Image (cartoon, rainbow, N blue to C red; front, side, top):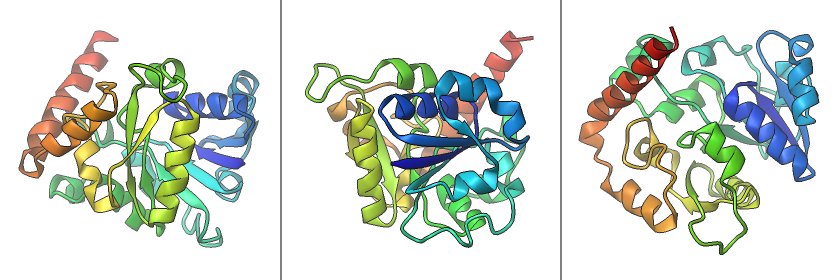
Length: 232
């Protein structure tokens, strides 16, 4: 499979390396251009390209950038990309990093906001796992303690393709419903960054309460704020 990745951070780089190892042809891009990705390309085996080239790379395109950067993507980036191409959004909204985004503060589901901005349906995946876990915790199907990941989005046939990709990476893929349901895996929710197994993910998704989204967000944001402070 040919896969484009827009964003070369921890998640983007990890996915590029893992998918290349699995035999996929991966094209990776960032906002600064392919010349800045030579080390990433060498480490992951992916081909460094422009953002526009990554968007047109193949069957799947992953957008894995900070939420604040989504409005800065080239206008019409997906305008000529075939409708069958699956777009995955791995993003999370952290006000301490992204600044205040009024629509999200008012309760718009994060990936619905992304979908509207880029003008494409998206599948929410890989947002609730740390890159180290994504790199190291994949196990064969049926293995004890296999970590599970929720996948939400529309249309269902796009979601099904992502479910298969997640399984291939060594994780139990949990169908978490439509994009409107993806709030259940946003930062701070019960399923976020806990590396649960399949029953644990299903339980955590069910326990999420939409009325508590501001509380969940503040908890996650405070945690990232503390991390930033510790790095100074």
